[in-house]
Length: 110
Image 1 (spheres, rainbow, N blue to C red):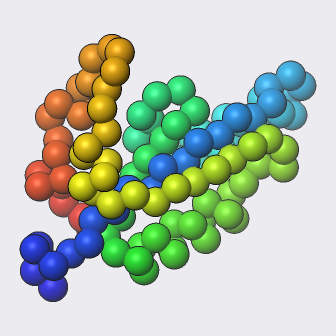
Image 2 (cartoon, rainbow, N blue to C red):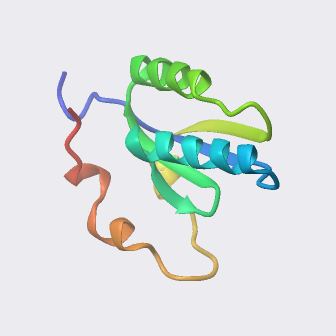
């Protein structure tokens, strides 16, 4: 499959988890570590995203995400195309270092 025909997408995860008790804090840390270890990048607080290569990768990572959900809280996910993600506007603040340096054309998928 050529680079031109690949369908790059982004899986975005938005979450709001309770952190009152020690158990809830542990669940938050475990979920956040899962996201980081699974290749997600923090876009902003409680918003993480990762690049996907096609619908099969989307299905795989949605299953992995579902298998690692904490017991409480609100977690949502959304898949957008790379073109839609690139069209996102930053209204306040500066782009993160990784946003400045690495675009989809420079990424290697394993």
